[in-house]
Image (cartoon, rainbow, N blue to C red; front, side, top):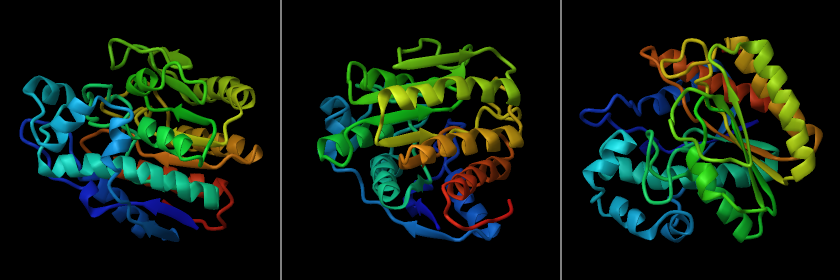
Length: 305
């Protein structure tokens, strides 16, 4: 059974002047329903503010909560922080934390949002307000649910915010495989960064992944993986610079889950990036990612998408 964390408030109207559309989060759920996949829906609660403030600057958290984010920070985020975007920004970290707790019980679970890896200590950036990956990892460790968390970021963009927020910790390992020449222009230092040249396709990408992931898992020894499963390495993605096919994304996700399952490590995924004018095609890539991760985890269901 696929366990999916979703909240209706994940879907929000596009804000004026922004190219970021929140409707893909609803389209993903519609696609899952049409796929025939058996899944259980879980609704998250907002992440308590104290846990957000444990990772982000409390002054910035207050700006978001009171809808007083300065214009320069809103430009950096890429959309206006209004009542609805503020609410989903509180819910998304709660969803990633809930997915991690479900993964510990079932082996795998997905947050049908999240992966906001560009959010920095005192500001959001790149369509990210709060860094759900860092917030969830910190809470899970502080409450004793996990001792060592590996954040695997396979979005086409480097997880700069996650790298900054988790820097210097020996209980969190950040691994980012991304396009070298893509956003952000100024990269942060992850525990391990693998920067790929433009146009890398299926075979070279998978070879790179399998060169670094097993070694990282064995040397760090996590008891949980948070997987930023962005689908923007796809060749047709509007903001990507890599050239993975549908089959390449499929092989990537199955390889990740096989490595986790082989070591008995639960895995929770977040959606991350995926961009294009054909938003249904993007939604189908995200939904297919969740389905194949659940299949590879041994959930005992199959679906065609």
